[in-house]
Image 1 (cartoon, rainbow, N blue to C red):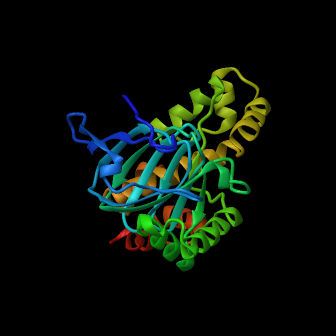
Image 2 (image 1 turned 90 degrees about the horizontal axis):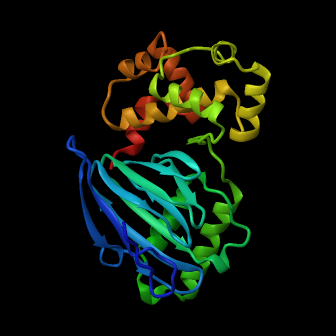
Length: 287
């Protein structure tokens, strides 16, 4: 796949996007500059306000600038070199500069995106992370993403961007991220978990089956992934549950396929992590 840089070398102008079908999907090459991306100067490097149909895929690409991605409706599933993200309307994603990523849209996604020029990124997170979407944050990103190019250097836009980036720097790191293991021992375990989400095998059982020391595996999970084996497995279940909910699957079916004995046990885990029930999540992602 080919990319062409923008006039100042900040934006990848071309990505593949299309609809993923049973036959593998049909992708169309289109210039982002003709699809709603407005390149700017100053702190606001560019913006995008665009609606995407269900199952649209933005193929593997990256930007030299940091990017703030938010969906007014629908859910974005993002696979990046930083790991796996699920981004509902109650969250926004800060993508650090030069992070290669791929986006899949679940439901009708009303995307609002803001790019931040690198020279203005001091104090912003150096790693990609999720943010809570407060009413203030929602209005700020909507206003900036839909502002006209002539407003890029206006005092109003500068003030909006200052406040938006202050929000980004204050609260980044919500738990809808699944880090990708690099160690081959962890990769074996994590790949199996993602392919068999109802498997309740313990770390002790994994260590015995693979011939590894359990304490060594625990230290690897903590040092490389920043969470325990149990936490990583629960995170994998939670993110998959969000995807399945967005695809229209029934809550009971999801609970059973994730290895929960009852729907109420699954709902309790969901509420504990997201502070809302599955039905409340579905209401939040609706247009």
